[in-house]
Image (cartoon, rainbow, N blue to C red):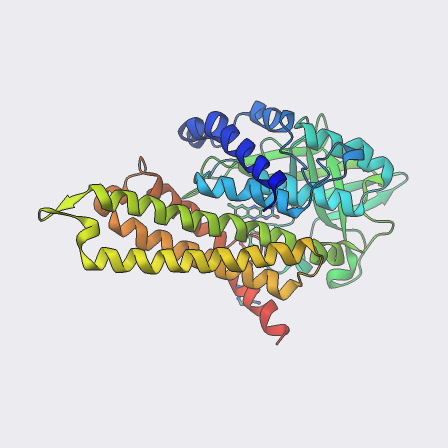
Length: 374
Ligand SMILES: Cc1cc2nc3c(=O)[nH]c(=O)nc-3n(C[C@H](O)[C@H](O)[C@H](O)COP(=O)(O)OP(=O)(O)OC[C@H]3O[C@@H](n4cnc5c(N)ncnc54)[C@H](O)[C@@H]3O)c2cc1C
């Protein structure tokens, strides 16, 4: 942390307390945050905070992104998919877009005029990205895109979507490219079902379908086709670290909630915190949450210094999300029956935590990637 990051932390905390926290229940019911919330976040400078200022960004580093992600974890925010929009989508564009495309898209993503999504997963393939079947066929100065994607975060609100598509018949990863579509009034672009999830129901997760959808050829990310897989591999460590940052913060928050509850709830004439089991569980959880934060802080510093390798990012993602689920589960137990009631934040945290082991690359895939580095 620096003085500047602390100021950002205060700003984010105040903003989320006023504009996000009071709306979580309503957003959960409507399966999405209010569209204007994105504009409000843009107005105070929370979006694209680590993109260059010449493109409307905040000119910060991943540490700035991490501050926002961590504040979300500290209030158990299971609604706002900032993590997809800012540290992921904007970063792909910043890394691989032409100067002209960056000028066109990044200021809009920074202001909240555009909401970003990334569409990799298909009904037939998730972990195995090399099996993507969506095609993008070149036709003059356009690509014609056909295919279907599923589980797409920000599927309802997205004005811009990065699509993983096959631009040639080259086998496996060689034929994959990343192509951006602006969705407003785009013929052939269809938002499918809003998917009913067991947790994080305030995030908007949908199917998307593309039928003879024409997008300008200059929307290809990178200077030639067939680079999609390599581009994904380069950016995925940041995506994984982003998930880990939120997971570590959520674990700490769960422990805080359980301690507060254990101090006031009584049974057999004592507070729960006076039982040795409660004390030991909370002592263990507190220790593990602190150890986790320390490791994640180390990874953030490594990433800011340009040294975070893919295997270490995978370790961060797998360890943080496994521990998040374990710690939240143990803390929920301290709430007894109230821990199972969705009006208690710990219950919603339990459901929201589960997906963290699945998306961004499953934890089994993380272990594969770590194992390859051994
Ligand atoms: C709420 C939510 C939001 C999401 N948001 C997005 C999004 O915005 N954009 C997007 O593109 N995707 C998104 N996803 C998709 C997510 O990234 C995939 O679900 C994930 O990558 C797993 O793919 P799959 O569901 O097809 O599972 P599969 O790949 O079918 O895997 C099934 C099981 O097999 C295991 N497995 C697979 N291969 C191996 C292997 N080689 N070794 C060992 N075990 C293996 C997996 O670990 C898993 O346990 C989201 C998913 C969810 C649930």
